[in-house]
Image: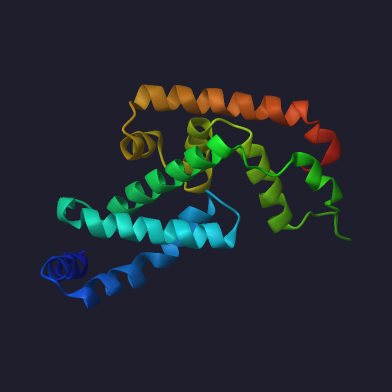
Length: 185
């Protein structure tokens, strides 16, 4: 944490190498988080860049009271949410029917990458708020409190949103007959 604070102060003082060190230190964690928002490598790279650009221009507002990565995660979550919001306006998503071609291997398992693509496609059918709360809860393993903090929501509202989102996801899976298409669900 002290290294981060030193690099942040150096960056604010005009040292461009200091920000490069911060980016290198946290880039892999931000890439992993942004991958939750898109399965497209080019889009993911763009989102990661957006996170670090937003962070750079907001660096003065970092108070240093918590780990820098927590502050970055808040920015990253909001960048991902903004991405979903823009994409939802354009209504761009992969039809679930495209996943009918997924097959099991000899040992009766489905490739993890294919399963992730299917799950991502299911999540895309949810409203972005529902998608976000489930993504943070199950993939990022955030607590209700952490999700509420990242998004500026109340804990009670976040808990309710999570419960409703799980129900909506279940209805979508049932409607699309996923239990029939994929025995693993």
